[in-house]
Length: 549
Image (cartoon, rainbow, N blue to C red; front, side, top):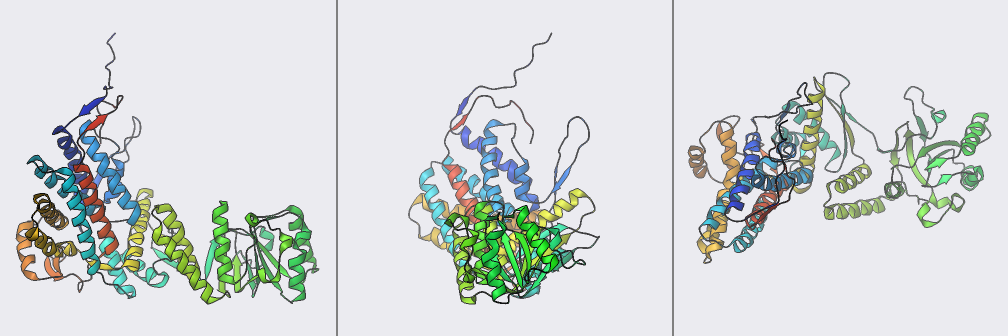
């Protein structure tokens, strides 16, 4: 019987120059897979997913973050270290701003490869890293000074097209974001037909459906509706019918005919009392009960605070030790109209204090700017968008399930980049803004007396050209010839690869979100600078001898 081959290797320590050589191989593999996706005429990457011994489900990808995410490990253990370092950098870029991963990848590769050559000639890695990061901050400042803002659905549609490269989708997203703004709520759903559709929701709405279908009073739309209601907001579970006596007494005594109660739960006895008395006409108040929005305690608290700010009431929060019998008349919020179905509750014409609402939104925006976790940022953005009243649904099409999921992901990525562009502004696209930074970098090279500092700025001069070179190569052009024409064209001019001519990028409607480009520069330069200071690789035992990408 043949002896089974051992596929596992022992622990291994790798020193220079093998460290940088191995990492470079891995970085080049990742970047060379992502580079073709840069530009408005991208080439796709085919990802082969083998399922068992039967059948394959190939995946066509044109997003750098997703391509990097699909590469879990490569066979060369030294190269794998560099590949996984870059993979992590690109995925964070994807999660933070939704776009710019290909730009970050080619910048990372340019800085690392040029930096490695310099270090091989005797440069100091730590000194070089410090100067690279200093140059990175200079680039970020230069990009910020080029920023301008877009207005109107036509300009926003052009912005969307520079991100997703689809005119049909871009027109819809331009219209949607012109209406809902940077923080507006956008839901992406599978289309009901063959055409993409958009739908706008009047007012604000939260997830928190009816506590009982028996409360539906609009059978056609299958929802409950109340005109000029007062609103009781709490995260308590109302167990005893007597707990509602204070609020019902206030409503009856003040001729308030419609009441919305937002609570975590009604007991069966409370529900039976409300439904039976209302059906028999004993109560002079129309009551609709809905679930407290949110799943976690923190999410429910935040939703109730937002609702109170919107409607002018005060929430009864379990964490403060109150009960339903602690109710005061001033706790009631007010609105022109409310609706509720099995999934959501909506408020139209909230009647809170506008100044307090503006201050609450400003406070949430300030918190949003300090959040770094992508999921927490998304939740805070949704809170702000809901309070500002912009809500839309985009119905996305796809001939197959794979295409549908691809299109949904494309919309999410485009929407995230557009939000950043609307908030922070845009710069000329097509790599032109980065090329415009060459003058300030060249000036620093001329002023430098330290050899490591001069090398750092020269490396950055190569790096800021890398995205434009990759874009031109992807459409089959020779970068050297085009660069000669670009250098004589003047500031703001770039090469439009779709019409194959040099144009003023801003006038042509070719933009990049400044947050995307700044994030790509930060990810690419800082990530590569850190990688250049890596001198030793330590492989733990147990790594497979060979794996495929």
